[in-house]
Length: 201
Image (tube, rainbow, N blue to C red):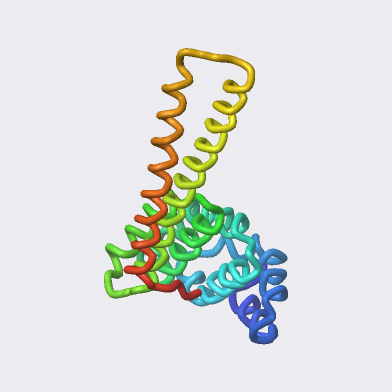
């Protein structure tokens, strides 16, 4: 297992902005980096954060979630996170933003609600929370539109080949879904105009 000081020296040789080299360095030395005492983690905490930032830039969201999950299971990382709130905040951000990009909106909403609560002055977290909520409303809108289209197609087929008593009921359901989809579309559009906050990575 590589010593903390040697890890720091080797990491310093990587050029700024060389994301793939940062990723490769961490994954090559993962065992040495994961099994450190809390005070040793503090000496090289920037390596962990640079690794997560590089993964985010490369859209490797699943890998971020896997890595943070490992951190969450290790007692020394728990201890260090409790002692360094900036480090803890960064880990939480990379986890929740990855959940957002993986379209796991309900989980990202819960996460960013906690960050907004803990850091109410950070407007970026408000933006991420809003976009997570928009993600759910967009999914609901798409589901309703798809259901409406499928139901209208079914009604068309029934009209062509059968005459059923429930045809009128199906028509009313389709109309209600169509109206609901229009209402949701305008509600979402109005909300987007009122809340023009943008995310920053």
